[in-house]
Each structure stands twice: as structure tokens, then as C-alpha cells.
Amino acid sequence: MANTKPSANARKSASTASPKTTAETPAVKKEYSFKHVEDPRPKVASFQVLSGGGIVFKIPTKTTVFDKKSNRVREIRYCPNEPSIYTDEQSENAQRDHILFRDKMLFVPVEKPNLMDFMIAHPGNKANGGNLFSMVDKSRSAEEELEREFTQFEAVAMVRDKDISELLPVAMFLGINTKRKSAEIRRDLLMDAKKNPTRFVELFDNPQVKCKSAVMQAVEFQIVKEKTDGMYWFDSNRLIITAAAGLDPVDVMSRFCLTEKGASTYDRLLEELDRL
Image (tube, rainbow, N blue to C red; front, side, top):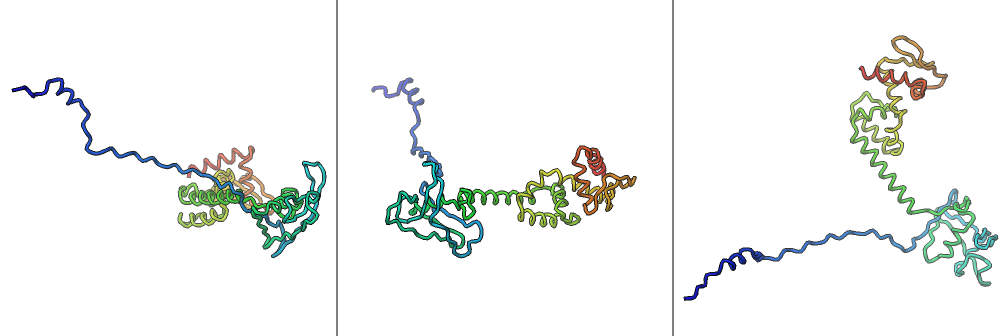
């Protein structure tokens, strides 16, 4: 009988062969990266009356401008059916039309390029030194609105996240009563942060804030004494700085401490407060 047992080489080859998969490996799905593509189509232009205007405001539809290309003064007029705004390029049958702002606004669609050209060239346009109307930059308005929203969010986050010890100097600078629970102080700070977020955020980097709060605490803890004519050391009753009539001694002292002459006084105040 023939020997059907596989040879050693055959067994070795079979053992090193790649095992067959029972199922196909699933294909890796590629994630789509969304791209931001701005709409290239022209937008409706908006023009706004600078002052006054009322319900309906009418501007002259014929005037003169300086044409830089021809280096001369030329007359322009708005005629809806003419391709040019320059009178000397318009036909004999050109007819002018009214330009009316309603509720202080004028919207110029892309279908009226001649009106757009006329408004841009008009001497009453703020961009040309005029004082009648200005073009509303919607992209800039959107950026400014976004910046305001982000600043307000940052201001609110400061009230929420900062330790009360970091908030107290700002609260004292703003005249908020700090002899209350921290939640009440944060509530009042939150109201100020929403009302004027830009100023609120800047207060945390303002050296006057820390200095004034230090002076106010020094008065409270009897390190210095506030009198109508100036600030004095509490222990020796020695004059530190005089305050003219009608001025707040605390404000005068705060400004003095931020000067080169008052630097040593400010250092002593901080040392005395640190020892409390």
C-alpha cells in the first residue's frame, strides 16, 4: 500500500501558511472633513442714515464727485435703466428715480448695480467724508457681535470659576458690599459682568484695582486712618498724603501708592495686611 503520510517539508509548509479567515475584515470608514466655503454670491448691501431720517428720508439723486480715473469733477445721477452713473455716459432718455431710506435704512439688492455704484460714490457717504449715511458692514457687525458674546461669556466664567479672594479686590473697587456671603458678592459681580463685560474682564489686570482694595482694607483694619483732609497712619497719626477738598482720600491714596514716591508706602501697607 502507498504511503500517504505527508512529508516533513509539507507539514512545515502547511503550519506556516496563513490561516484562512472566516469573515472578511470590515473596511475602515473614512471620516469626512467638512470644509467651510463662503457663499461667493453678492449680498444685499445695507445703508443707514447717520442722524435724523425719520420714517422716510430722501437723498439727492444728482450730484458731483471727483473722478480719480479722469482726474476731474463729474456729475453723477441715479437712473435705474442706465448702466453708468455718470451723466455724460448716460443716454438722452435717461430718467432719474427717487432714493428713499425707510426707517433710516436702504437695502440695495444685487440686481441694482447702478444704485450700488451711486451710493458708494455719493459725497454724502461717510466713507467719502459725508455725514448723510454709511454702508453697514455686515461681516464686521457679525464679528463685533461675536466678540461681545465671547467677552460676556469670559466675564461670567470669571465670576463662576475664580476664588472669592480673587474676586474681592474687584468687588471692592466696584463699590460692592463685601461683608456678606460669597454667593451674594458673586451675584452682584455677575450683574456687573453682564452689564459691561469688557471693562469687567480688564479690571483683573488693572493695578489700580488691587491697590485701591488694599487701601480700603488698610482703613478697615486700622492700619491707616481716613480723614477729610487726607490719609494718616493709624498708630502714629502721621500724615501720609493730603487730599484736596472734594476729593476722595482713598482714591488720592491709591493713586499715590502707584507712584514712585509712594511705592514704599504701598509696600508697607501690603506687609501690614499680610501679617493680619
